[in-house]
Image 1: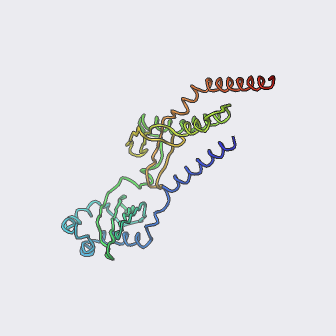
Image 2: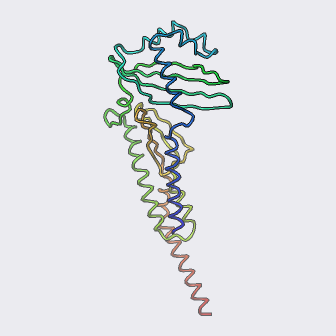
Image 3: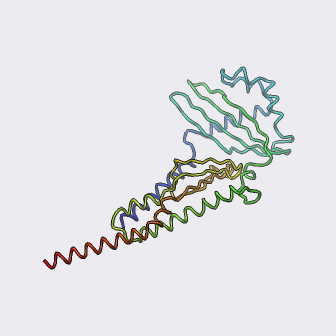
Length: 272
């Protein structure tokens, strides 16, 4: 029993470490990189087209023209800029090339906008390989705020599964640990811990993805990269837990029969 409990605790700790690792900051990104990207977008908003074009990577030099920059600027809301906030960043490094992407949220008097700059650093030279501007209806915090209003039936179904499946698995897990099983109890515990298949749902947009070959620890979860990002729900089918309840009575019966046979064998040996 102690070994089983230790295995369960170890599994939970590993799961929590993996979950937190997904949300941790990228060590490949520095504040200097973020400041560079913010300054570049700022110069773009100030209509400094010469500076903006001078840093564009040679592969994109023909695409990012002054006319295109002017058209992109038209997507910005009217009025003075009230605030700027870095809401997302990612980076990757391969050999001698580093690529980083930075997303900023801008609040103007006339509304909200997103802008991102993708930076490439190779052989000591820094260039821009991506620049985009999007006008949004509200701040990302507001757009991605968790709410139950105006949601589809699929939203409510996946939310219910995300809540019920882990609870059902945990209850089944406790019952399994307390059920007298002499053989393969640890296999039943592993079988119960993981759900089979999964449906992932973006709570903000309603976009979903079904994965048949997927194993979800504890049968479900909810994660958001930040307060600006949408909540992603994941719900799995607790196949192992369901099968255990169907098999529990027969497993107990088999255990009792095994104990009875062992007892009869012991009494037979003692009588001899």
